[in-house]
Length: 138
Image (tube, rainbow, N blue to C red; front, side, top):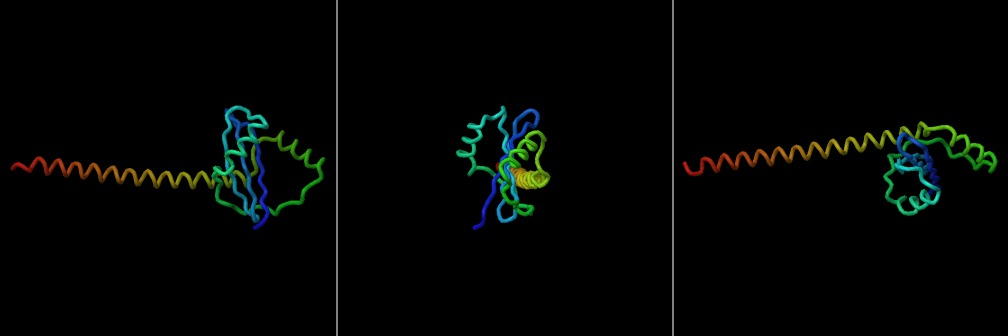
């Protein structure tokens, strides 16, 4: 069992505040996107993590860059400030989110196709039954 790194980035994506969870395990990156609505406070984000982290649906894992060593605190603080000022999420995260979106789209299409097929079969059987009932007395 390897070490896992989880990073949460919260940013404003008009008209909602969005959080992106990035999970790096065994040099594989998977991402989950959460819409908060109004700007979440720190304690609300912490509470969300405690209550709903297990319910998050992460995207399929993609290859990630090697995990870097922990920088010194001042450098980390400067990098966090830079990340807060710059908007958007990393390209790897965007790719992982897009992959998850495509996967959900395929599942939804398959479900819809199956529902249509079942509905068409039901209507066909209903027509056949009505046809039989019409000719039953003759």
